[in-house]
Amino acid sequence: MSDHRHDTDRTTTVVVGACPEGCQSFEMESDGPDESADAFVERVKATFPECSNCGADMGFVRKDEPSEVLE
Image (cartoon, rainbow, N blue to C red; front, side, top):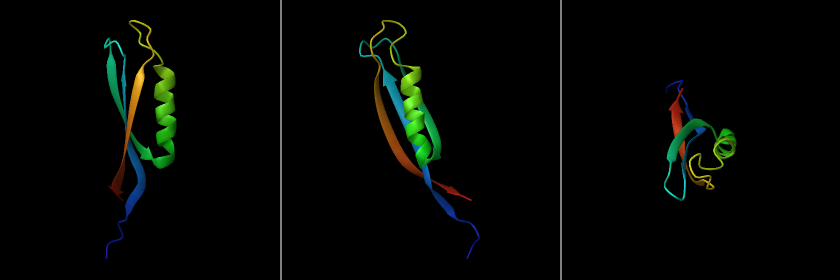
């Protein structure tokens, strides 16, 4: 048996933000411990609350996927 273990307490989080008028959109990804995913999403929402072109509120979609890292 190997001394390697799988670290399964990690999440890959993708946040997609878009202006409802279609002026701009972005996609950001973070990989880290499960507890950091919520902080990442809140930071993205606070940093980009509205479209810099027309001022409309940005819409957000979040997708979380567990990730495994071989240590």
